[in-house]
Length: 427
Ligand SMILES: Cc1cc2nc3c(=O)[nH]c(=O)nc-3n(C[C@H](O)[C@H](O)[C@H](O)COP(=O)(O)OP(=O)(O)OC[C@H]3O[C@@H](n4cnc5c(N)ncnc54)[C@H](O)[C@@H]3O)c2cc1C
Image (cartoon, rainbow, N blue to C red):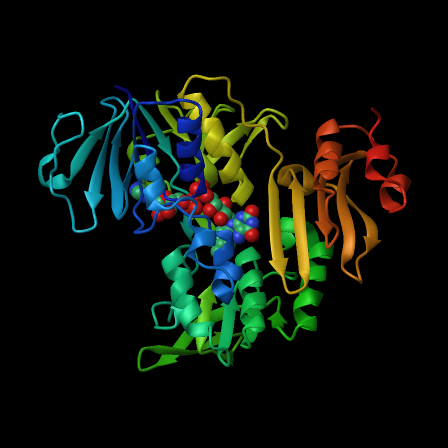
């Protein structure tokens, strides 16, 4: 019987496992995650779950029981430590260290090094980990990063009761979302950013400034163009962050300076890499029978004809099933337009588009930025390459159609909210 192994505990792993069974794969399946929870999705960790409005049910994709019902062996608290694509084996280490258990095919473990599992097909859905900041004081109690459920629980214990001073280092999506959630919980929030504008790398300076105004209007002390020097504390606990010689008081600090793909296994197996594991449009890696999906994969996109790595929920949700079909030798091609969403204070937004094309594009606004009710389009030589709807709903499909059509659009009509978006598409 075929044995498929999925390494990962996020949405890409869960959605791949689900698709494998839905497509009729009746062989053995093992999902290996180093976390103690069944695979889960992360967006609520900086929003509803952190705020205490959403529970584990909204976070965990399928409860452990679902895996048992589907005949899937779920190995939590287990790290895959070594991948040998030639032998088709992956070595596992349980939380308490390796025990040299027998491999499931009876091939034998590898002594004290841990169990060796033989696979026919393997999916790497190892995601990403928080980037660390090598500064003095980062090890103090009260200094956090946010990637896992356990990280979110720790942060929730600190901020849930309100009345604390939170300093966020970095104004990326995680910093901005946690800032908004923490304010909502009644904490004082300062955000420290090295660049001139928050989120500029993701949405450009003009839209970044819109997010900055939103935070300032909600009482966040957002400081840009600052240089964080060190984190200071007393008796092992954080008390502040020194920025350009001034100490910003802090009961709690969150370092939110991005994420890096979890590449250990891929590197161990010498898979081709380039800002993530390089995969083709069917999500195959350079090694036979090894696939990769989600945050860790840099996938060749057939429309823009280059590799891109997306650290987005929808990417994990949709790439997992494509990888699953590819593992089953079914037609599979990952050609999604990157999609992202965020909720901060009273602002909800969806963003679709190709970041590499948006960077050079012209911004065209439809609606009222001051009222925070608009759609921003990124237009390159008359073609829409990105679109962000802010507090305007049920337009994402049309925005995506405009992007995928590749058609030159009438900019005056694009700007004009009274012209239906459908009319911009020549059908
Ligand atoms: C706090 C937070 C908020 C977010 N909010 C949004 C949002 O609003 N909108 C949006 O679009 N995206 C958001 N994202 C991004 C989104 O959650 C990620 O794109 C998504 O989680 C990627 O899923 P994944 O399955 O590829 O990887 P991950 O979710 O990172 O899962 C990878 C899993 O693999 C496990 N693993 C890694 N290596 C090994 C190994 N060797 N052995 C065993 N297990 C291993 C990890 O422990 C982890 O559980 C957010 C992310 C975070 C952290």
